[in-house]
Length: 191
Ligand code: B4P
Image (cartoon, rainbow, N blue to C red; front, side):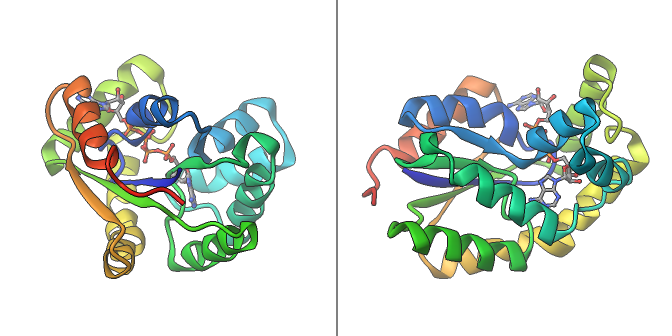
């Protein structure tokens, strides 16, 4: 199973990714988590990514694409993967198309989590209190929402044209959202 999980910041991508990846027996690959791990270890990639993440901007495509390509080449992704937070730009879509074509497989589905704007902001502000993420301040949250609308939301139409999009209501209890995702995906044909 080769899946993408999309949605605005706060829609529940990271929250749902683990459950969905476990259900299908594939690794959950979160570009945000990989960047954050590099930031906390102080690697050159982390130092580069931190400048963008702290401002709510996207890390440049070249850096992000190289990182995902390396991760997908690892053996645990041979039978599939769930991408959480990638692709986020048109250039990343094209790059991912190339990566998947290279393996002789195809993308099976794109899950788009939807959520009310007020609820998105409330969730991220709540996380700011518990997790202390540098990009969960009100100004940066607003910038992340803006950039999502400009750069990432248009990708949904691209995947919709390919017949891959499953739009899932991300409001309500976490386990209810998970159930909706499973219902949508359990009967799709896998490559
Ligand atoms: P991400 O880590 O992907 O951050 P995110 O969009 O905020 O989503 P996340 O998965 O963390 O949160 P979720 O909605 O699950 O990216 C961070 C940054 O990394 C980006 O801004 C960018 O700078 C960089 N980056 C990442 N990928 C990139 C790419 N491809 N290209 C360029 N740059 C990239 O959860 C939010 C909160 O809501 C949590 O506290 C959770 O507990 C809560 N929640 C979830 N579901 C809920 C529910 N049903 N009810 C109540 N609360 C819920």
